[in-house]
Amino acid sequence: MATFVQVVEAGSFSGAARLLNVGQPAVSKTIAQLESRLQVSLLIRSTHGLSPTEAGLRFYERARAAITEADEAELAARGAGAGLSGRLRVSAATTFARIHVVPMLPRFLAQNPGLDIEVILDDRVIDLVSEGIDLSLRMGALPDSSAVARRIATGSRSVLATPSYLARAGEPQSPADLPEHEAVIYSQLPDVWSFTRDGTEISVAVHGRVRVSAAEGLRAAVLADVGLTITSDWMFAPELANGEVRRLLLPWTLPAIDLWALFPTGRMASAKARLFAGFVETIMAENRVAHSAAA
Image 1: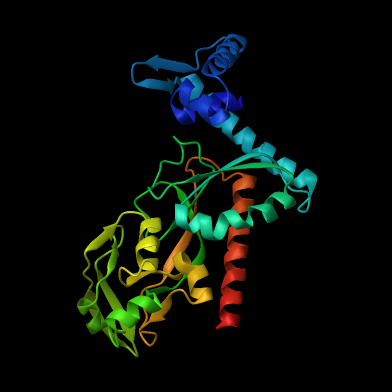
Image 2: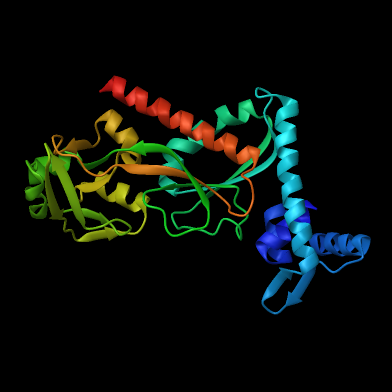
């Protein structure tokens, strides 16, 4: 039943085999045995891939619901402190996960000794259903999507630079000074930013000779003293804590950034996915409290 669900969601035997970590022949054999037992065709095979028949779609919907119910029943039977088992596939932006999520995995795994986690690190927005993702952690404005989203944290954006860059180029005193500075630009964010102070708003376009498409590149360029940048504080949390980068224009504020937990549409979020989303929400709240105390 679980294999059939993965085949439908992946759209192919090979995709399901990859998600299940088994060979494609094993997946094909399992589906053939299922169709033989039920005495009905569940899948339509074509050059474009696989799609469920009418009977297959009905079976898929019931099977997916049964798997979700089984997860819920397992959680109830084990009790809140006993943890879950099985496998959880989580996707997240590379830099955010490296700094904030992956270091905390031992804590979550200790709470759930029967659970395996596969973390897909990717800055691109991926299709949760076709990639077999149980939960995606995404920041900022969400693209048009049928995924179910829940906001789990809100963070600050700042103008950031290294002390070495500021010693060379000087420190901007207001947003109007930013066009005179070399900026490292993250191509997934706007070049024009709106700053607010005491009810006054000013919009400024930043300019720079270096433009990067991934947050890791942004970090590397800023830490190499290439220029200042505008980004979420989450992306430079370790360097803000140890003084390698500084927040600038502190009286001025930038729009906040949200962290979202996205669950695949068309089915109830699994107990494992909801548990991990709650775990990330907790660690982000703990980080916020710790940073406030340090400040």
